Image (cartoon, rainbow, N blue to C red; front, side, top):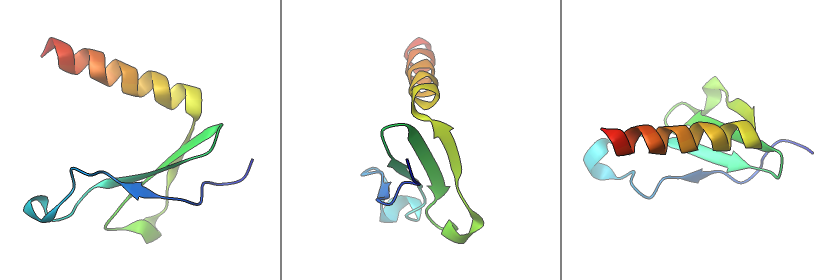
Length: 65
């Protein structure tokens, strides 16, 4: 499967925070992230299942704070 083509920015990103945000794109097997203000600096890509586990761990940690 090829690289993700459709990027989306968080709905939480807006003028109050300088429009700074990560953008995310995904395919069935890959999740890629990039800096919305420095797209030319490249992307980080992860297997979709590993990224899902990472996000779940963040949610669980935030719930304990």
